[in-house]
Amino acid sequence: MLYYIAPYLTQYWGPFRLLGSNLLLLAGGTFLAALLTLVLLPKLWNRLPHDHGKAILGKDGMKSAGKPTGAGFIVTLVAFPVIMLFAPLAIWDAAALLGIYFAMVFGYLDDRSAVPWGELKKGLLDAVVAFFIAGALFLGHADEGSMLVWVPFTTSLWHVNAWVYIPCAAFVLWFTMNATNCSDGVDGLAGSLTLVTLVMLAVMLYVVVGYRPVAHYFLIPCYSEAARWAIVVMIVAGAFGGYLWFNAEPSRILMGDAGSRFLGVLVATAALMTGNPFVILALSPVVLVNGGGGLGKLVLLRVAKKVGMEIGEDNVIRRIRFPLHDHCKKKLGWSNAQVLMRFILLQLVVMPILLIIIIKVR
Image 1: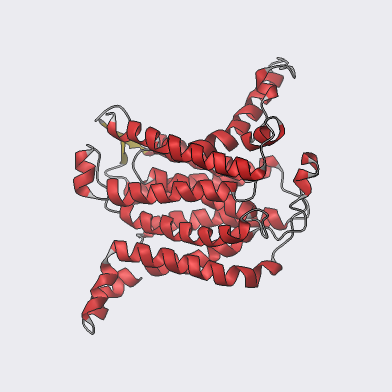
Image 2: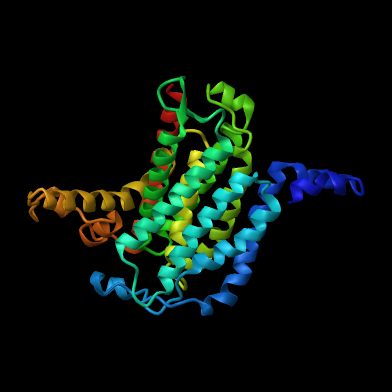
């Protein structure tokens, strides 16, 4: 909104022209979202449902019992008016953002439910959200019936039609959403890892694919709308940074499915806005391995069972626990603080290496 009214306000006071600067909007929106979350979250979290713990994980899994959960509902609602105020989104980008909020609402309803929703119900709802967002992105950014995509290791550009782009993009959205949700098992883990990803995504969107000289240097297309998604990404990063202040171990509040699903689908949406879906592998490697590995293991075990193949307990697939943070705690004896710090360090080391390979080796 500020971006669009800046020309009118400038008539009355010259410095209002700065409201047309994406960089100023990004910085101001990030600060405001963080401040509002820090102030409002403690005043509102007593109205949230309380976590029941996870008895299947034993004593460690019951540490969360009784804590307010579903904080993602409050944090994302705090971020919403800030996004509307600071991010000048086009109509189809706003539709995609609406789909991201639908993912949050479904997660919150699951958090509030006395009986947790089943895998099938959640999986189908996630698929509906994923296809909706993928369709909105295609309608908003396709040129003459195809989406322009650049890929690693080649300077060629692919023109992808709707029948290919939408299902593939929906899979990226669905998988990232659920991988992030599965990673939410240690205080601050999913939030901190995703915060690192969001900051790097903002740099990628604003400085690389959203800035023509840099995009041309790397031989990739320039997307003018990318800088506006950088504003959205950083506003959410600011809001969840405020949440992490209270989520540091021992946490006082949990974000629940409302937060983890929102973060996962936002990361995937922003990655798709870079024009290269493979960027998600570089920007969120630890989350995808940690939570996504469990999804892959589950599918593999079920397929094996269907075809009559028995995978014994001594098999390496069975011996590795997923999410991977559970394996590190149970098998390697890491504390929650060690899991958090080491996973963040792994992401900080691996992420720039993969990003350089994807962007530069072409």
